[in-house]
Length: 231
Ligand SMILES: Nc1ncnc2c1ncn2[C@@H]1O[C@H](COP(=O)(O)OP(=O)(O)OP(=O)(O)O)[C@@H](O)[C@H]1O
Ligand SMILES: [Mg+2]
Image 1 (cartoon, helix red, strand yellow):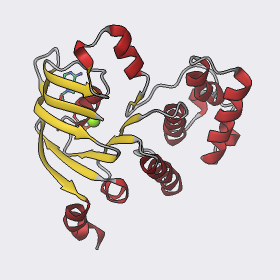
Image 2 (cartoon, helix red, strand yellow; image 1 turned 90 degrees about the vertical axis):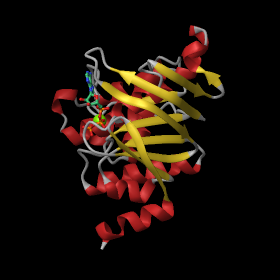
Image 3 (cartoon, protein in one colour; image 1 turned 135 degrees about the vertical axis):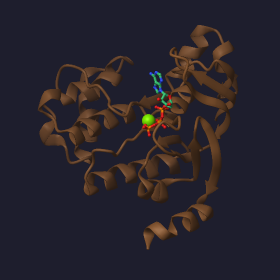
Image 4 (cartoon, helix red, strand yellow; image 1 turned 30 degrees about the horizontal axis):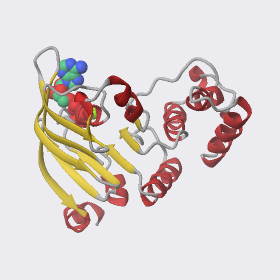
């Protein structure tokens, strides 16, 4: 479980992006919503242990993350994957990009290649396996980054706008994969403006504004909240 307790964050220019937020991330899919600048990305990065809050505590797997020794922090950090809203692919081919997280974990090249190809196949993307990053559309690049994030089977998956460039078919595949992860007991957090995605995936939805949590909706509240939109 990830818990942020009374966390605040200020960027170096003095902007207070997160103000005294307490949030618990349980198994399933937690969706962060709210207007531009609400603090969704900043909160995701705090939950991922990337940004250190200026106040408050981050508890991951019962460990106080920022007071733990560095070696313990690194071990926990490996269980968490954060996917940037505009992910950067490495030089090299799509296949190499997806294999990379496995190779750095000591998995042999043949196994890594096989697994990466299997992942590409699941997205119907095998034909782009040997392309370079500059030869990809925005949606293809987003999917490659998504597969790269998933391939190590992380316990915690924090995704910033994971479907912004995807067509309906690809979005369905991503949705299905995320549903499977949730049903396996993984912890998924998604920041998004996509209400349909929230509607179909969320175990709970957190509405943010001005660096704070305005309210939290469960599935039933979500249905009534979004019913205008669906009809
Ligand atoms: N690197 C930065 N330096 C200074 N201020 C920043 C930085 N990144 C974000 N901010 C500010 O912090 C606040 C929260 O931004 P954040 O990116 O977390 O919002 P968001 O909810 O993800 O918005 P969006 O929906 O546009 O992605 C905003 O006021 C933003 O201007
Ligand atoms: Mg954002």
